[in-house]
Length: 207
Ligand SMILES: CC(C)(COP(=O)(O)OP(=O)(O)OC[C@H]1O[C@@H](n2cnc3c(N)ncnc32)[C@H](O)[C@@H]1OP(=O)(O)O)[C@@H](O)C(=O)NCCC(=O)NCCS
Image (cartoon, rainbow, N blue to C red; front, side, top):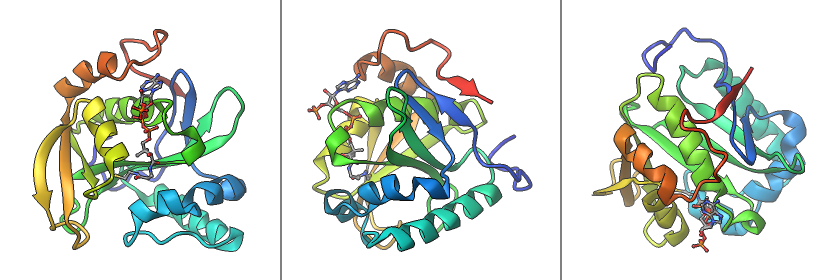
């Protein structure tokens, strides 16, 4: 399966990392998802591409949309809920999606509940998702960061992503672009201080 295979009808796989399960969204995740996507400290960095989600009904609707879209998304791409293995809580979400308008560049992005920032969960997610994409014929992935989003900028640098430059070609916004290639990911693991149990072959795949 490759990014060029538009017939693939299934969502991305679940990936298991030392502390997280990256899995498809379910409508039942709405309360946990609202705690993230309804949080001003998260939404400020997603706007205007995505507005702050105002209530549970809106979150349910959005999750239904994401689930339907994921079923149509050609792999390797998609949206994942990040479930913490220690307690089963959904602590955020991550995406690997084609960047408009060209839909050729693949963007990685994360949205974590602020209570969970500072634990390396975005880095652990990056290593898992990027590794998965690179094993599916993807050569490079990009992160686009709003100027001033210092946490996101630190995350991309921590994970070996390289500065490309500033652009306004995506979403009509001025954004800082960072690129990750397969060789960069190999260097990123130690820099990201991933837990020792993290295998050289990347995350275990859960079927
Ligand atoms: C961007 C965002 C995902 C970053 O979250 P984060 O927790 O800071 O990211 P990381 O996973 O890289 O964690 C790094 C921090 O965890 C610490 N850490 C602890 N254990 C760690 C481990 N095992 N591995 C790596 N880092 C670890 C690091 O020292 C670092 O701490 P510091 O920020 O105090 O220096 C988060 O701030 C967020 O959701 N923001 C709102 C949405 C957003 O802006 N998304 C990005 C759009 S481009």
